[in-house]
Image (spheres, rainbow, N blue to C red):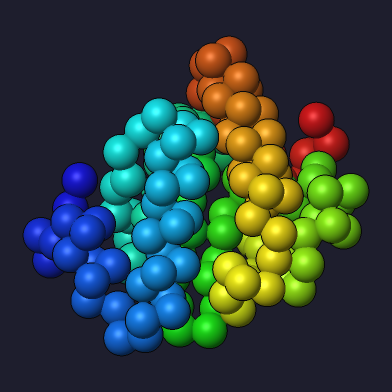
Length: 147
């Protein structure tokens, strides 16, 4: 898939200004592709996502989201865990240098974290969101729920 500028994921990553961000992005693409078995797709303004799920809330809002993904920026990679960071607190405590919000893990560079732990977290997140999506449209914001 390409973005609105008709760029492929490969072209987008190659266009990044920082060599470290390019290398880290290539590593994350390889990892997330292996976990998901899906090709990377460009979402929004630079998010690279793998797999999709459909959501439909009681409010009437509905759409599609990426099952796992990341947003590369110089000095701050954002890894999206659509089921939320709280579900992964034990593994996140072993990850290495990072910061968090509800469903985002912020990493300055992959060399700061244990890649095997990151891969386990991303794989568990992918499996959880995929299992919820099998039941039909996801009806709650997963990272805010206790499931």
